[in-house]
Amino acid sequence: MTGDALQYYAVLGIPATASVEAIKARYRTLLVEARSKIGSRQIDVQAITRLREAYLALTDPQQRARHDHDAAPCADGPKKHILRLVDMDVGEVCA
View (cartoon, rainbow, N blue to C red):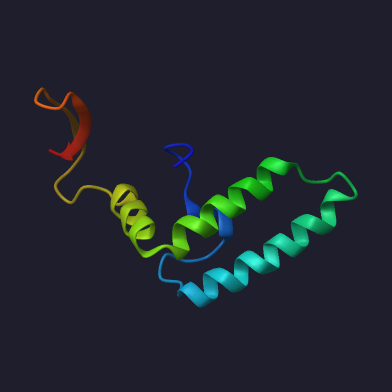
């Protein structure tokens, strides 16, 4: 994921319950709109890059599940940071 605040569903303007077919259709629609604006310099290349990144993440079942898991708030409250010394990996878990 490019940034912590990046929400792929918001980039594509679709609900989290959208089917893969709906994601593909929305991506194609937004891509056509974005490409039409390139000629008039109303959109930057980063916008198209974000669209593609969101599309690729949400149409891949494993990446979508990871995104949904990472974006979901903890049921029991805020996250606390942990440090696992065995593999030197820093992560977050629900408190």
